[in-house]
Amino acid sequence: MTDESLDEEMLLELQRRTRNLPREIEPPADAWARIAADMRVTSPIRARNPFWQRPAFLVAAGLMLVAATSITTALVIGRNPNAAPSVASVSSSRSVGAPATLAEFTMRENEYIATVNVLSAALESKEVGLAPETIAKLKESVRVIDNAILEARSALARDPSNKALIEMLATSYDQKVDLLKRTTEMASL
View 1 (cartoon, rainbow, N blue to C red):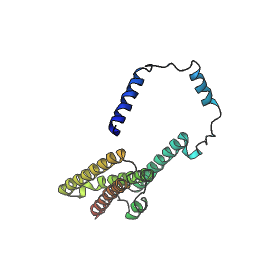
View 2 (view 1 turned 30 degrees about the horizontal axis):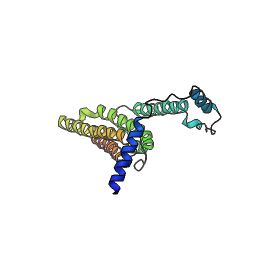
View 3 (view 1 turned 135 degrees about the vertical axis):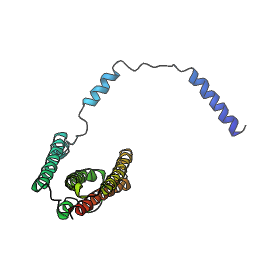
């Protein structure tokens, strides 16, 4: 006999035995009760989340961040609606270097958005001083950058740990801020 014939005989024997097995087996009547009781028994001590990881704290921190961003924007715009924000004030609102994680980027994204809002508001007040062709080119450039941001965000939603995507998204925001900053300075001349 060869190994193949032995394997085939063993397979046929196994199939014959499994055909004779019952199709269903009822668990013991008290099985679920025992499982539930086992789950209620003191399991390993579960560490409670630190306070800064609890949902209520995270919501409060998010609201504080939004409020601080809004107040900062209002203060910058409220100083002199016709004056463009200084390069120093806009630059200092952003951190140096690309964020390393999605969580770090998400925190910095609010800074980017606030900076973009300030620059956009300043630019809208100066738009009259720019040629219509310049305004059209600027809007087209912003649209291209916004599309790049949307594509990077979409890709990041599918792969949140991809550092290259996080860096690409941060770079797109940097480009948008830089474009708006330079155009605002140009409109102020």
